[in-house]
Length: 556
Image (tube, rainbow, N blue to C red; front, side, top):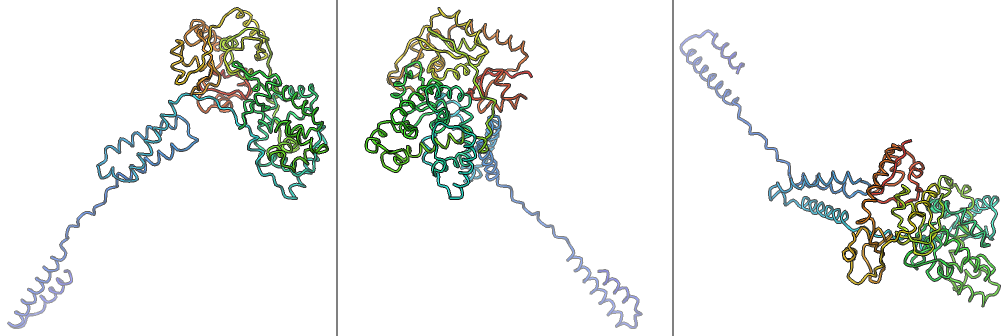
């Protein structure tokens, strides 16, 4: 436009000569004017319509949030508090879902996420409200251990042999062990490598009992190192049960247990007592050795029964275990059982040589025994001694009821509570406990039985240690009519006041055990140690914690 104006100005200054020139000049002016108007018309700004940004799909956005919550809830390492927060967040997202339009709510990913959240919520509610179940017996490790592959290369065998020979220099054994035997060396290698943690844990579990049990074995004329057959039999677990039904640390079947004077009745099962069953185990081993005159064959008989070994010796008078191992007289389990025990003896007798440093913190269980010829309830005794009930149950593992048996019974209490316990029990000697033994009929539940005897269902659970959630017909239950749930409330209340005074005087904090707690976690939370925690509560590091159990946190 500016260029056209300048051109017109120049033309205007041209000297007009004649009429023709004037006409040309006018025409030129009109052309310039029209051209400028056209250019101006082209420069008119046409309004641009705003770009439409598509809205975010709320269905997909809600689905992503719900999936994130479900993924977090599916993790196994989150606490109950974290779960609570996540469920609250999930409920908010669920409310958002109900506010979506029908089209948005039809999003497939969102539908799947909502169904998943509702399923997780339902499972959580069911689990939170289910009845408590029986503490299952630990499965005996022998069933899995003796089926493991133990092959070693020549190099590994030579290396293991050198370790064994070095360890053997500082060990005196009363049982022959062929150090160059490939199977024995293979089990040694297995214990120090693949099964290292399991072997270490088993040995530590047995340490509190070993000194006493070794003395029992020696007393019964059995080599003390044979206590380590408890590693292969049960991993030194008090309540181990095999698939065949053998029970306890020394894995006795009921018939053999009774043969060696272990009591199994309504009130107790002495297979669960590590010390009493150790005596029976030593007696049985002594009998087997007197029968076969060979410790390897005696160990084989401990596993498969003496009948098979007797039949083998009848046809092979000079045969030993290693020749028996090549035959079909015994199963694979027994063929592996003896080498596994011999290897356990080598490693457990000198664990330091195989890189296992055993702690001395739980070397001894300090308890004292009180002879009873009358029944007592463990609960008021625990309250009187100001110790957890679990401590008395731990010290008396053979008990199946909260009452001691009606006849003679050796009650174990913490050593530092002996005098107090003895004085209390003298006072309660004449006290009678009103109870009945109820045989379960078909269709009966704990609730219906409790109603029949006018007691609280929790009283029946408390009286029968390890009671399963479902009752079987002909099962027998102890029903204490004057139990602590509905009766003796005044005495219980007084005891509560007394305990509170004691706790206040000691200026100690009381911690209530929650789901997932362990002694180490509780000690860490409260700035103390497991050892101090155990000492303050008269328990051991192996005491089983139960939800709701109260622990005194030491002030120092």
